[in-house]
Length: 111
Length: 115
Image (cartoon, rainbow over all chains, first blue to last red; front, side, top):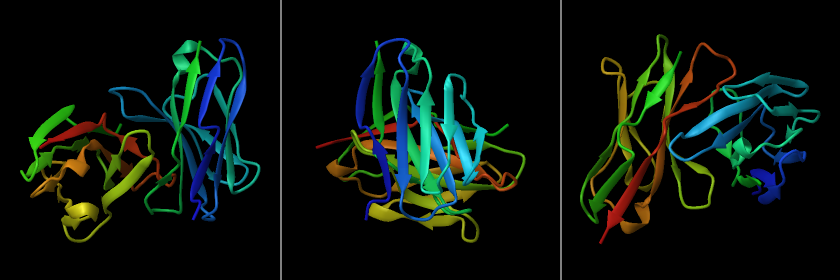
């Protein structure tokens, strides 16, 4: 059972570079979410999607963009990476009021 | 706006001792409540959830939590911890009114079980 798969698992970027993080789920979930985790701050919601073709801003959306062209995929983009975006990124998915399932995370360092 | 407070950033405890990890939330509407566990270099795994019904919720690995609406708390308990319970624990709340089912997380409590 794959569940929620995030790629890549690790990445180092230079300031100003761009990249896309991919999240794929095989549970046919309607809802998908991107969080970032920073020490002492728990997880904070960046963007989320309530269905294919729809996205919305979360708590900390600045500097990120997302797309949900297919129901199973949710992409997180950094157009111009900044050191403040160094973090561990988690993707999650769920169906209606059921608990969210999380991927194993992407560790991103911006130099 | 909703918020979740986990007052203890770290809780050290000896093996086989009981433990309670505290969680308080603030919300003006009804909520769903969750506890997740995160082992080193892994994602979050659901421990237990409160959606409705009995206020005492049992989860995996011998953990349980009690929903107290009057005190807006959802404390996590285990009567006897093991070394393998060493991990970070997150309390989270979801607003029933918001149809996006977004989660608001607390800052986490690191449980350190010592032999």
